[in-house]
Amino acid sequence: MVQNETQSLVNVTIPLRPPATVASLARMGSSFPSCLSFMRSLVRRLHSEAWSVGPSCIELDDRGYGYMVYTARGPERNYSLVGFSNALDDDQRTDRVIATAWDASFVLFDGEPGCKDIDRLRNSVPKQEAGRFEATELVLARANRSMRLFEHVCESLAHGRQPDTKLISEIGYLMRTTAVYGNGKFGVADRSRIETRAELAGPFQAEMLTLYMIRMFTTDLVEHIARRRSPERYVPLDRSLKRHLGIGNATGLGMAPFLVTHPRLLNNWLMAKETALARVRSVADATPNKLARLHGLLGRARQHVGEWSVDDKRQSDRIDQLVCDLEKVATWLGEEEFQVGTDKPWNCVYEKSVQSLSLEGQELLVSLLIETYPEFCQDLVHKMAADETYKLDASNTVEQMTKTT
Image (cartoon, rainbow, N blue to C red):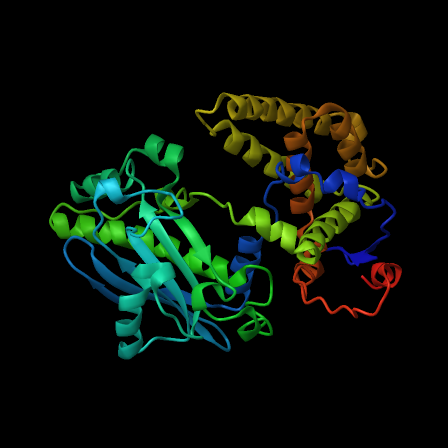
């Protein structure tokens, strides 16, 4: 039973989708973000607990080389991103993980670093894997500038104009990471140091906080360079354009072995999503405000997908199919069988999607349904972590081990 915004109870009568369905590589690869997503969980906490996040130290030269410190101050603890901007020749800029130099390198520091800490980190962080780190370092990361967008934005702002919105929409980032390391990698702090802290207990919360501040670092860096180039003509980057910019990710190859070696964690992620979906599908009838919310979310999704553009022919075809899928969903929601008063309307629309939509269309609809009832996810967010410590008694038989695991 779960309580919704009207304080009535929803009896969960729809079973979870079977593991063979939800754990297929094709379906997992077709998933879309929702209110269960790791960054969304972080941003909600930052907002609800009134965290302050911003630069606490800026030491950059006219070309934007040097370092900046960003501090996130919460109710109980503070965390700081120490980011170093380095000179890098174009022929050294590569997305390959074997690279040894980057435009920028970062560390998430436990607390607020002093002068001695900065000096130590200045020597180690730009070296990344080759550096030496202490328990106060929680996450290690590095990033390269977008060769198409970074300089364009700098020049535009320096000349008193906003950058090309089409180019921003096509690229979407000023820098993209080539690695984000945590959990004891290369000598940074082990997970055990932070796993009992409420703000970092969930999966990848330390890494998400790092990326949240790296995004601030990138926009502040490009504005700093533009301002120093032409103080009289410079204009800041428009807020609406900033909202289009995220942090690119060059590879993500580490997720493949991670998922294989963390089955309990993957199980908890899938269970949270499937439980939320089952709750929504079990809703007896659609209230007018929930129907309106889904229509609004669907409209935003259609606009967003319509703006996607990729060079890859196969993926481009999938995007075209997804556009058609969303048109079908919009048509269904206008039909009488999905109006207020319909018995289990969300289950009806989900079942119809299984028969008519692509995998990506089905999973985008799942995210939209979950997003329509964010209150159904509040308790699930806190169940997505997992203890991956395995303790087996070697004297047990295989049958006994199977029963206990």
